[in-house]
Amino acid sequence: MDKIRICIIDDEEYFLKAADSLLTSLSKELNICIDAHFFQSIKNITTMNYDMYFIDIQMPDVNGFELSQNIYFESLGKIVFVSSVEEYVFSSYRNHAYDFVRKSRLYDDMKRVIQRYLEETKDYITIETQKQRFKIHMQDIEYIKTLHNDILICTPVEDIKIRMTMKDFLSSTGLLEKRNFAQINRGEIVNLDEIKEIEKKTIILKSGNQLSVSRNMFTKFRNMYYTYKYR
Image (tube, rainbow, N blue to C red; front, side):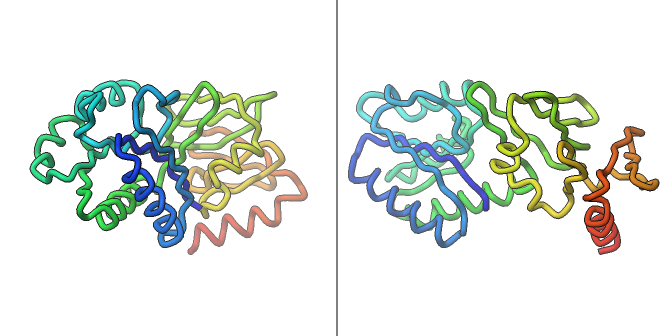
């Protein structure tokens, strides 16, 4: 199931409650997990690790456009401005806006924005640790393996090492639910699109790298691979 971390900043408590109820309904309707956090002031925000920021433009202690500047340089998250003044929509796109939500059409607009985000990021995985946050396009992943207390995500450009167990990685990304990834032994996962050929229990990748399939996983892996290849 897709998961989105959302931060909503608005000085009006009634709006935050309405947004909370709305997101609960949307999570069921869209069959996604929405991890939403609500703030009346930027001072209470302790992290910038959100996928989307819904920011009210008109607030007494800070202007939403000014606030977005700090978020833009500190986070990879998308900035969505929220306002009851529809004329602000044009100004919002000059301030790094991903989209604009009208308070008068809150449900419809927020649903549209979230669906847009899901569609645009469906081929990415996001990985978060206490100190790091990575967003990686799945087609760039060649294979993944455990390395002591870390996992190593191998891509044609670079190998990304993350302090994380394979179990936690799979739980947070749902990677094995994607039909083009398969586990080949206890500590390695391969992108089926990167396989050039299979010789006995050895996988030869397009890059020339070779991986070994464990004996007890070979039959399941082979069936999965050929089903995917000739789908």
